[in-house]
Image (cartoon, rainbow, N blue to C red; front, top):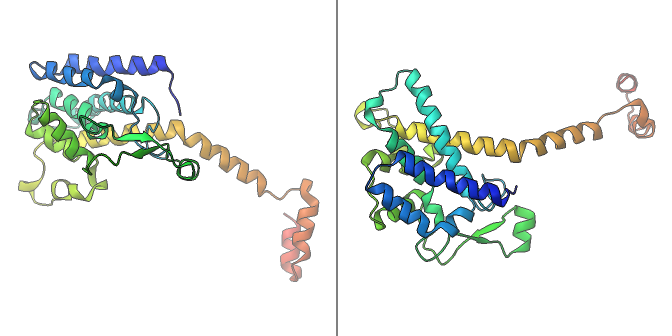
Length: 256
């Protein structure tokens, strides 16, 4: 999937406007300075390295993050309608977490995380349009994102830390200690992590449906036509029936 340059630029304006609109001073200014410092990298980077994953194309990262922000705000309304305690976190915490949930994918201050794939076999056979930059020491995406915020003197609340840390939900076993507890005193004391995870899942699912679902539907339709026995395919049908010795089975198939 590719998005035009105009869309990439529009997405970047929306990205910055979400910071302007929802984040308060003084960290609003620090967050804007940080993102403008790395504007050329973040605006163009993908959200993942492989086609089967979400938004693995130039500009995919910001496109995904904007969708997560929008979904988070709408999920907030849904949870509120069902009686969520809205006093346990703020809208600013929700949007801050959504904007920065995948920040660790940018790499570090010197190196970008995703580089164009140079291995033709991996690109053609595995769908890996990008490869991970080996110049960067390994770190889980949430951990690197939180470090980048801290390293740039951008403060975050405890709620935001937990939400960013656990945004992958139980897909990441490291989150079990937060999200799989059966003891009331160890459960998260805010619904923020669950809203962010659901918004992230919704965004990734929609991206899948736009990019991949039509291809699967086309393949299914093509396979159906390939495997349908009809009167227009007498030669193939006759050959198949000729190998059957059972008169009853042969008669049954002959009537298909």
